[in-house]
Each structure stands twice: as structure tokens, then as C-alpha cells.
Image (cartoon, rainbow, N blue to C red; front, side, top):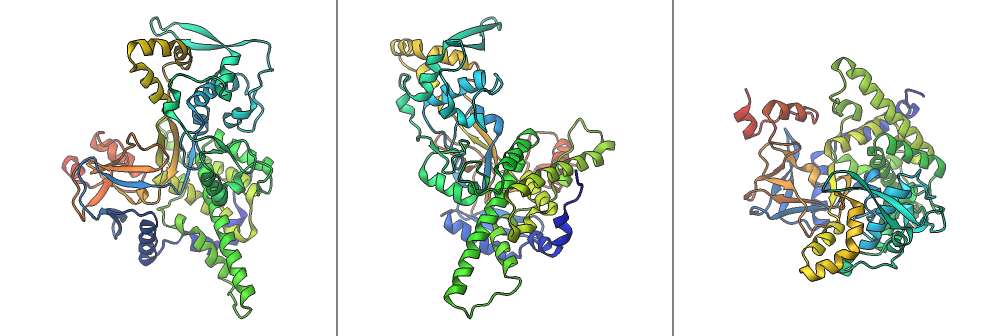
Length: 489
């Protein structure tokens, strides 16, 4: 595999412009506009010469008060989690029904995922909605391995194939499941069979923002869907942070194309309008602006050294990470390359983009309604509970102790990423009962006065001082909060 990217040397000036830190004025104008657009009252983004950006309270917050709900710029559900949860590919709300969520998971875990992925689909975790084939196989039931709670011995529960099929296609309704209704699953407009949505608006938004380039369906605008599938496979096998990078690059390309189209329309309306040679770069920088605002370092420079890697092997480890990124980039370039946006496909840009995610990403977590459903059944009056559990108990046993898995992934949130760290934070990321989508939710841990900085902890703040400082070194700073000043040397 080639160890260098030819684009880096060819577009040195453009790369420098893309990675140049925005001016203070540009930063302030961008975040002021973002706060207005999202109608975020109560906070302000300020700039600090020592720590860069910060979020400050513009009103008083009491303990437990909501400070911010932040929509992600780009986000992705972990590929392994797609087996357990069917969610909207744009906003990450659970979709379908209680029956579909349970039946689909049983099918994928015990038949699809663990039986050589027999379901015919590019990403079987999503294709399973439509590809359940009741005519395949010779058995009339599936053997589901579960743990016997009393003795911790393995046992098997045989569920008829027709029952799982009926759950998935909606023929079998579980008792009281209508109390936990979800939006219907709307398939991707491109026909990939991988992305599903909670609404037409989410489907359209995702298509226009990035998915039209990353879709593997018939309507995809990708240059080569086969290579795109290889890119996704590589990301799933190595690090799904590459999927976020692909979304960010696709987002920038599509925004550039929209700006370029508007520019050409202006020229057609008025032939006197002339654009300089730098006009293309200016448009690319404008499209790149949301990414430009994030703090960046090269991924292979800022990634934490795993515990099992000896310090003497650190250089080799970081080179291996760099080569992994280059392999991913080459696949992505072959799949969605755009000549006018060529600087985006250089390793320096790709490395800094992934590094931005490494340093700023927040875990994406959405609670599953399946857990709420079984808890509701368990809380029914004894007579109703007994009647309901005659139907629900076999499914609960088949799912096992981890009967309800939340949606899990990662995302970059433009406002949350401005929050600085403290080992004694006054706020935290916390999903409340009503928060059922992929937005970041920040709540106050204590009273916060107007003008006070809002801080969160990037790490486990209960760790000893030395361990905290070691972990924070990967973020490129040494913490000097009140707790560290008190506990430090």
C-alpha cells in the first residue's frame, strides 16, 4: 500500500487554508448565528485566549435544569449496535414497533448474525426488515440459547419460526404494546436497504446533507457503490470513526455543490459578474466552515496509546494508525471523489478531521422503549400481569438478561464541543426520560450563575489526580481546575 497521499503536496496552499484557525470574529459570528438559528436561549459562546472557546450561562440555572439540547453535526450508530436497535438514521429515534424491535433482534442475533448472516443484504442489521424468508430452512422453530437464571446453566427455548416472523411483519401484537408506539420505518429514498427513518423530513434531510453520496442503492450519487461498500466494511472492521469522516466530507461536498450552483446562476443572470481564481476555494471554505470551527489535531498524534502497547513501540503504533487512515481515505476517494473538492481527499485533512472527532465526540445514547415495555408489564396488577406474561415471558427469556439495549453510537455536537473540562464540573451530559433522540442533552449539576462558565468532565472525575492528568494529556492540556490545584503537587 502506498504510504503517502499525492494530493497533500499538490494542494499545500488549499490545505493550509482549510486547516487555518478561523479568526475571532468569524468564530463569534458563526456561533451567534448558530444559537439564533437553534433558538438556544440561556447560553453564550465566548472566546478565551488560553482555552479557546467556552460556553457561559446567560441566565441563572438551578440544579437539574436543562442548559442545552444540541443537534449533532454528524453522527453514527455503532455497527454492532444495529443488530440490537432499529433507529432513524438521521435523528436516532427508535422506529417501527415493540414487536418489530423484539422480533428483528431475535432474528438477527440468533439466525442472521450468528448463522453466517444468511439474510441477503448489504448490511443485514437493517435489511432484515424486508428479507425475512419464512420458506428458507428445514426447521419450523429456532433454537435460542438463553441463560437459566436459577442455575446459570445453558438451556434452549424453541420459538416457532412463525412467531418471530409474525412479530416482524406485525401480525402478532403483544399485550399493551400500543402504549409504546413508535414512528413507522421509512426506507431510504436511494433504495440501499440500510438506512431507515422516522419521517419523510428526516429521510430528505439526511439525503441532502450526506447520504446521497454514501448510499449504496440504485439512486446513489456515489462514483462506485462496490468500493463504497468496501469502505464501509473497512470502517466496520477497523474503526467506525471513518464513517463520521465520510459524512463530514460528503456534507462539505454537497454544500459546496449547492453554493457553486447558486454562483453559476448569478453569472447567468448577470454576465458582468466575474469570479476570481480563488472563488472555488472561497466556496469550499464556506462549505467547510462548520468543520473549521472544531478543535483539531492529527488523529495518529492525539489518539491514546492502548495499555497493551509498549512505549518503545509507540512510533510504530502511530504509523500503523496513519496507514489505516490512508487505506480508508483511498477507498473513500474512489467512491465519492469530486474534482472541485479535491483538497478534501488529502491525508492531512482526513487525519485532522478524524482527530477532531477523537477529541470532541460525545457518546450517542438513546434509551430503548423495549425496556419501558417490559417494565410496564412487570408493574401490572397481578391478574393482568399473569395474563400478559403468558405471551411476553417467552420473548423476554429468549432475549436474556440484556433484554433491552439502548441505541449506541458517537456524534460531533457543535455547541457541546465548545464546553471546557473541569474535574469538578457544574454540568453533565444526561438523557432525561423525555429525551428520546440523538441530541446531546446538558443539565446543571448545581446552581450556575449568569456569566459563569458551564463545564463538563471529559473523563471520570473520581479517578486519582495522576490518572486524571494522564488521561487529559491525550486532549492536549493539563487540568488546573480547583480540584486539581488542591490535589496536585
